[in-house]
Length: 161
Image (tube, rainbow, N blue to C red; front, side, top):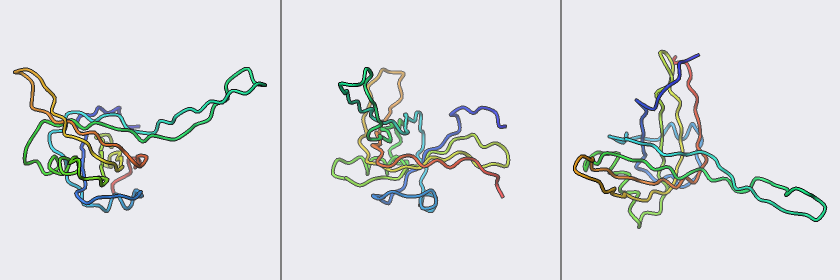
């Protein structure tokens, strides 16, 4: 069993070509990916569902069912680099006039020697950048929110042939 991993060494990639339909792991893997430079933080993503309740006269406890799933709205925070190719793609998709879905790939640094890393793929609409304020010792940052429109597709580590 591999040791526990930190987020250090994880990478974020984006695709410059709009992806407006659900994709499989194989079709995601075949896309042309551009690494986003100087990523400082990757927000939460994954499935959360609403919980629907209905009370009936004959039950003492509310009855519950899962409702619609939300794939997440992760924020990607970067140290601003005006000509970083991945950041440029994020800015292009973040343009309010751009309604297309951008594909995103997050690669953990957890595979270990002779193994691939865990990869998450998804796609969604991009808003941003948001320019956080700060003081004299703060870096110039940009934050992008990815409104995911597909549940993340997880590819677990495997042996490197």
